[in-house]
Image 1 (tube, rainbow, N blue to C red):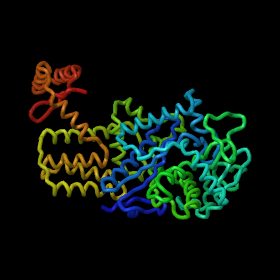
Image 2 (cartoon, rainbow, N blue to C red):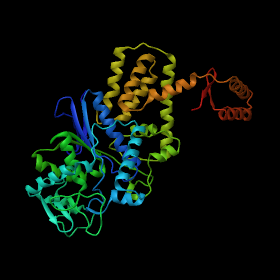
Image 3 (cartoon, rainbow, N blue to C red):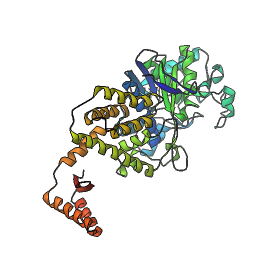
Length: 474
């Protein structure tokens, strides 16, 4: 079916038309591995995954590239100044830059796996593509787009690129007026940015390389251009990232790439909105304290519940995070798992192909129309309540929804089904029967005590229409 996405470049929802039929090449800005990923970072990664799964469900072959930034991302990223975030992280953790890069990349992948995020086709590190970044800068230099600031580095002259700022509908003068950083006296224009930074003469960096301009390291904005063109070609379908990247980082990528390729570099730009805290501020690592997936695990909430909560919103709308909201989502997720487990108990192997296709298309349609995941989830819940569809067909569609939305419903329902299939010991059954009798005579104090005793013994008692059900606790 026709895929539609909001293109930041054109500022409208438009039909997706691939460069190569039935093929999608897309690049997503990945993590800077100097700290744990916060929940806002992970929201963006979930949306990338949902988009990929949507394309796969529509029969596309997907090549996904996501970078790992392990050098060159400065603390004042708009003004190309401050400490390198990796060097700062290494000093904080009292480890080498290489050690923290590996540690936080592994932690990021752990979070991604727990959120059921599919691994990218390619996951290049910036430090593995220094040669390509130097070559890109040299090409820009030959075209006259660069200049040197002594004792600082090689900069890109944004006045040489007439369309600078087009991603966000601005011009060079407009960007000047909206600049939120102080003007660097060495820059020709406030929006100019570093392509190559010289290593400080009085400081030995852990990450630095020889270049035609001297020992130093690449600017943050250069790595994505070099790696995407190396792995996806000079023209590809989609580039994604958080909404904060659209104003500077992605405009800078366009400015570097399009003079080299001589045509539009990326067809469609997709940006995901912020996760905000209770005060309405963007969640970010730069604020010091932040929430990561470990904070969710500490509450004994499974990471997949966070994914489910994200799906309940839309990628173009900000989400206000709270544990109360997450706990509410947990109840909703468990309710769906309960219904799927009930379908498994019916043990129907029948499947109506015509009904399957009808519901398949009804579920797929909203997510294909600008990633309206919440609407697809509503259709799916309507399916679970639909009495005219047999359990075998429903279970086949649950498998499709798992593939489309990545919710691991079958896996969790199977665990619940297996726990419910285990017979409780006679003494536990006897306590449950006594509890039911206590409730009948309205002795709620005794009923509560017996529920507590059953719970301590490792079982959960659930009231049913016919009496009760005992489930072994995990």
